[in-house]
Length: 304
Image 1 (tube, rainbow, N blue to C red):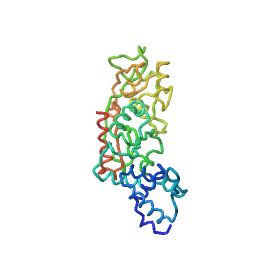
Image 2 (image 1 turned 90 degrees about the vertical axis):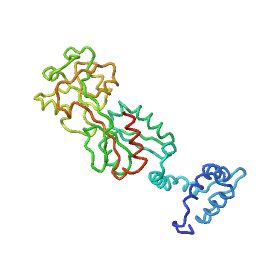
Image 3 (image 1 turned 180 degrees about the horizontal axis):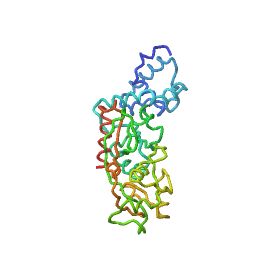
Image 4 (image 1 turned 135 degrees about the vertical axis):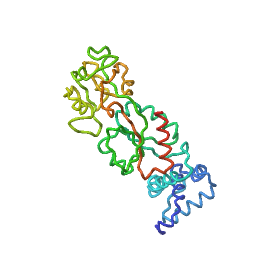
């Protein structure tokens, strides 16, 4: 390379990528909305800067050199982060945003609402690449490192103060069990009945503790839970409920997801245990960025 990198016009890298993709200076110019002579002059500047032929003329276009191919392949790593920052601070147009939006979601919320979240995000950001992941034990560190743009979690997940969280929706907790359960009543239930039934437990996705929130509530009320199954999978839990008299404390959304089961009323419980609160969040350092503010508004509207 004959010149210092500080003298490189980054717009020329965009031109290089377009010529590599089309193997034609004319088509690259059309894609970028510039004249063919301007594109040709840009290619000459690139050749001089990198001291490399970059492109060899062929009968129907140009053939890129190994260096041109490598530079084109690195285009996203070179310019895309800069473009993302500029978009975040500019007059943001979500329908034109072409970057990636990575959302990490509590796996139970993903099962219950993932399809609806996807539809709403795709409508709001039709040109973006969407990445949906399940929250696990490494997700918080990955979010703090910038791997994820947004998270959707319930109140049982401990979250760092560096992540700005706001409620998205709140819904009742119910007892989920098979239809025509021999013990449960459809009008009201009390702990003396509920505590005798085997329990299917859904621990928080990152809580590998001996007791989950449901089991802790049993002990607070003076009962010892008889856990028949502990699983992180809603479908597996559903199967156990269908085959036995076991019960599971679940959200109304889980009940909607499993119409073959019935949602029975809860006994008297701690106020914090009576509802699920699902919140969404992004890094505190991103609070003033239009991209993240708009994404949060979209997800608020999704659950409204």
